Length: 349
Image (cartoon, rainbow, N blue to C red; front, side):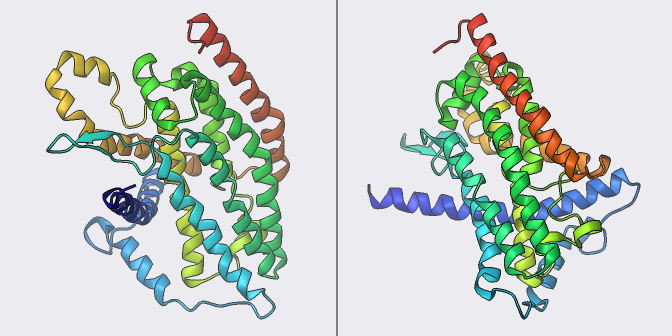
């Protein structure tokens, strides 16, 4: 492997981190603005034009805010827990394909870091299960009963919804005949978006993903009415900011994965037809890949915020019942239904 390839990987990794950090900051702005509109208010509108500098103001506030550590806390684990939670959210998008463009001179440039990894979906499934350790350790190390309860709830929630989430991945894997996300996107360009082939799996994925990232109505590990913020109740300053960074980064991540697995990824709707009809688009469309994916991600995140504005938090017994009694059987049914569609339309590999 030559030096140019290493430099290319490093540059793309740095760009990915910068994009995620910027996305985290302005996802908070986006959520506050959308929630304000749902509730007939203005939202942030003081810091900068249209309130666009509000995330900057919040970041400065958190940087200078005093960080407190409980006297009886396990100080090492207490400090490491936010990082254990945040790092998986940053590295998971390394395997998401963003398209390939042709540079002057004929050299092909893959815009993703490792978009053609042949076990990309397995990589995602494994990385998503790591961040729960940070939440559990944050609750336990705080030496606070509310925080410990939040960590325990997070563990139970992760176990309950991880199975349904994993089974939701099976439909796209069956249709593509590969665990490579690049192959998943290429197959959708030929037979259509997978949301039409496994709609039940798409719905199961969206619900399970909300539970995985502890978003309302599944924010039981935080539940401020019961646990006064739950697992991060003892955190302040930048340690608290890391937990918030993780939550909003995961919003972006689950939306990117949903768009890639079920909505054609970086490709335009009917892209192959458009390129065949208008050949000149073939030179332009590859450069639009990241922008097309961004639009799909924003639409999905709007849906996540809409759910928060609409639905009340479920009870803990309802949370468990939904995961085990409804989502898991639905996920299994989705696998069966996808197999039936494949046999019916001659798509068996």
